Image (cartoon, rainbow, N blue to C red; front, top):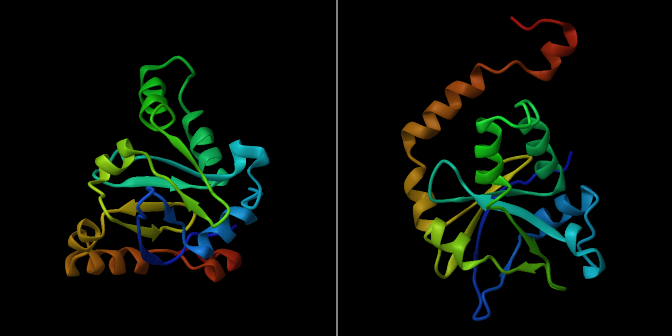
Length: 168
């Protein structure tokens, strides 16, 4: 699976465009999305939506969009829970198409939600990513948070143990 890795900050130009990190464009292309031709606009970019957890933008490629759809199928089709999540994610999502130079134009609605003005911080989270206002992202990354992440990582089972059947 193609992964979104690393963190980078890119400026928004005077026309509202921002360059998506090159490695991310490669990851999107590996998911079967044509990033070089606008002829198939529905598969020519990134899937994004306002985060449900705060002032950031969540996103990914076609694989992440499809994964969300599969997760939401756990709810019966006509339940209030499914309708709520469908609206919060798919109803507010946008598909940002790449131009010929790998740039996208985030909407004012998305930028306002994340408090973004002149720069965007792209944060890779494996199969998905987040888009932050750079100072807000820095403020959320504390020593306590890093310590908690290290504890969680220690509790995970390594792939080698899983193969051997040793999950203790």
